[in-house]
Length: 128
Image 1 (cartoon, rainbow, N blue to C red):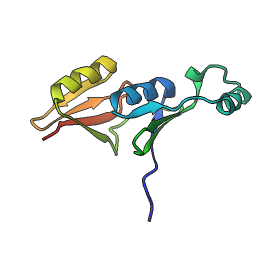
Image 2: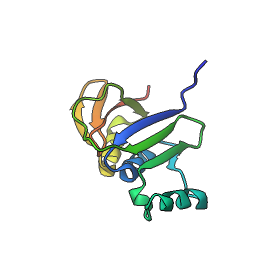
Image 3: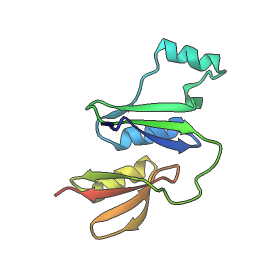
C-alpha cells in the first residue's frame, strides 16, 4: 500500500516559500545543504542556495516532506488541494503566520483561510 512521502508546491521562489513553511509548521526545517548537494547545484551553475530550484523541508517527527520546486508559470486559480493547520489559539497563530508573510483571506466561525507568500491557500483551525 502506498504511503504519503512528499507534498510538492510549485512556486516562483522555492527558497523563500520553503522558509515560510518551515517556520509555519511545528517540527519542520529546511534540509541542510551538504557538500554533495552544493556541488550538484554548482554543476548546474547555481552558486547561491537562494536560487535553488528545488528546496526540501523535512519533519523531525517523520511527517511527510515538503518540496518546493521552481515553475515558470504563476498561480492562476484556487488550489485543488490545500493544507489544514491547527493551533490551540487560532487567532494568535494567525497573527504569527501573518508576521511570517501569510495573508488572511477569509474568516469563518470554525476556521480561517489564509494564503502563503506565493498565494497558496491553507486553512487554520483551532484545537479542541
